[in-house]
Length: 228
Image (cartoon, rainbow, N blue to C red; front, top):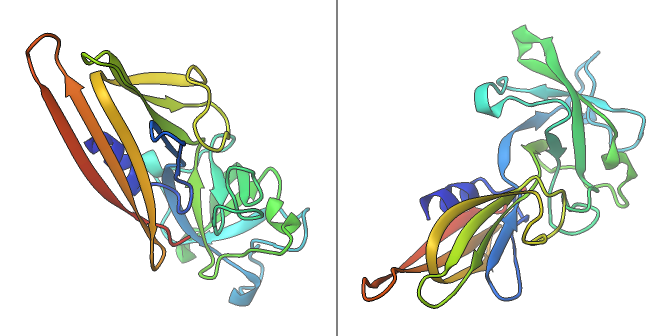
């Protein structure tokens, strides 16, 4: 439960999807983020994130350089801007998601970094959907936690990755499937939108040992920040 909760707290805003019977929860895990320079910043000679020209694929990031596990990896990571969960601002469909081609220092003295994208989908949006705070998040492919249930604790809890950009739970054997727990008797995920760009994710996990060894039912709630 702590592992699931940790991932949920890093969920890309408005990306959490629970399947119809509550046995799977899917979302993008945010790796890092930052502020992009826009035309309103009026910094001469510095590229801005362009929401008009599709050929403009380079922009400047302002702030501290992401390093270690937060380092932005070319051809692996994706920049997402203003994810609202609906087109044209839905990271699953790609209207506001662009793969990173290159990340490099632009001006170390001013804490500016150059991000080059393979393509610029932001300029193709209709209407244009820039971030009100000129912010972006960096993600990889989405993840899914999935339960199978069974009397006597014959079910399991798994974590799926690297299955592409399916919105919601993919096929049970898609991508890389990692076992999180055995002995699952019952399991349910829930998700409720709250006011002021926030939501509540619910996790219920019931485990059972064989024979008369007993059961335990665990319930946990996670507050989710949905401000894009």
